[in-house]
Image 1 (cartoon, rainbow, N blue to C red):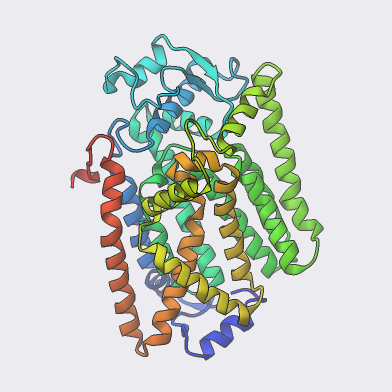
Image 2 (image 1 turned 180 degrees about the horizontal axis):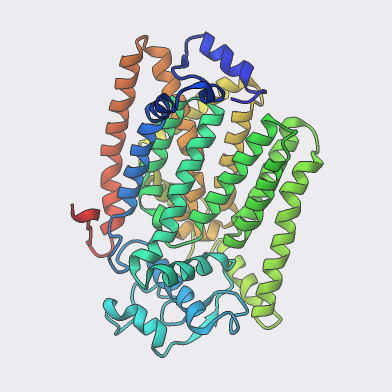
Length: 461
């Protein structure tokens, strides 16, 4: 743990909340290699199981054609990626180039008249009608194009790109939780993160959310490291790099950079120039570059981009939108239940109450600051693009860190406060984890099989 956090950790351990069971990381250098690996495996082995579980859940229907909820995204970005390969960067000037056959108002899951087995062959050689698609920055389509060139033209390759980003984000989230809390809370929170349907299904959704959240989480790790050891300026470089790369993947990265800076300014009561240079400046410059590229690709206009922004940020969304605020809220809650399951409607408010009480003791501690940042990230996305959020469940994807962190911390502390014996605490948390998975599983099944009834477990199970 870092210098500014050390007093808090030492005090909490002294109270018996979560006694240290492993030597500090700084002491591992003095441990023989065989024991070092044993210590690391004992500490992080359970997390490896969580990663395997997340991979298993996101691998359902992995090799199937586009058959499930919102998998029109898969067809659309398949055509965008193939068009980079087929036509090069010239016709689109590096921006996304989609085909009318795959991305249109009907949100198709397949190309009319083309068997699934021939889909990629058709995209590579058939008669298509491409057009510049300016709705998102270009890096996600380029990443998929690279994966197709390396691994071949398969449905699972396209899905693999967001899947790997989601797994990498889960690992970063676990690292972040260990930096802010202890391994027990980090494990339980990571289990929640991995088994929410929002990750178990939408973590492999072929859209920009997965890589954007990865970059946002990397930015948070850089921020925590830098706040803990301000003299280590390399973490500012990490924040800047995460902002730039994330900005080329998705628009939310730009306002997340402002959220991080703004919350830090409010909580520290100081305008930090170094943090501004690591977040605001890269966000503004990258945004300018992406907008300029889209302007160039569209032949000197931004009208289509302005139109789609108005459509997604307006009340009407893509079609007949909500009649009033009440109908919008009802739709958002319904989609929230699908993404995070009904039980969180009760548990999350109780967890927030716990955190509010902790805030009276801790004040603006680093972990509470991070919680506010993650909450504002998820909330800002559905408020800014409330028209899009009305129609799409995965518009709430950026709530994942907040939900897992908040409920994970509150639930673990509740068990530790109420139960005296460590083994009983562990057994209780394991029982809760099993119950949560059992409750979440039907929703995961529904999301995978809702449109076509196809539900194929990975690895021939």
